[in-house]
Picture 1 (cartoon, one colour):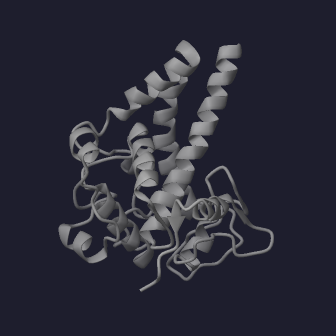
Picture 2 (picture 1 turned 30 degrees about the vertical axis):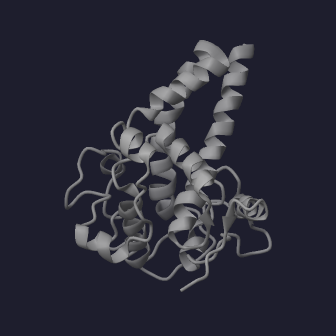
Picture 3 (picture 1 turned 60 degrees about the horizontal axis):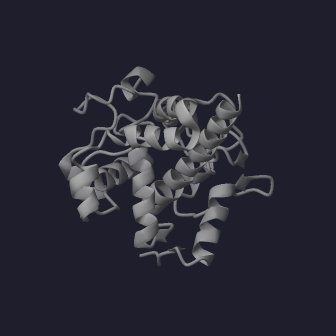
Length: 246
């Protein structure tokens, strides 16, 4: 029982770290709201690799796809609108072609991408060559820390994160039935909860769509975005800064 308790606690901590990395290093960074020093970037990329959030040239592709999601939100040109794609299509990562979610043309990448490729040694020799092997490294880390129970939880958690992340950040944040914030049609993004802790502030998705260039997703007195406060901490520590807007 002790082993399982500590394994679950470790999984929850890693889950939270992953969402902080995704929200700040990937999401808010591609909007130009924050930038990080190289060391923080290397740690963030390692964490993303552990949970298989990795494929060749992902920074320009993902940033272009997301910028198009904002520009054409919930229209036929939106690369990942749940009003034009099903959940089963979203998690079918083997189909990358026109007519499927996540697809953007090379021309779209040239036009909309906001993040450069990473070109250092570890990118070219580890992450690009073995983009799906991070799950085994994470499983080994959990085994060393928590034994066989940890290895099982670490392995299962990676798959859970992949599907849960896809459902929450792509599907539910535009189709969740409860909403208290309006966006400009045809955008149907929603705030799924006013207290943004579990998803590092990504819960306040409609707020983000209304003000994508705002570092904080909390826009009302009763809202809380823990990702913003992490950003403030990292800035105070000298690990990050707010770029000048063009």
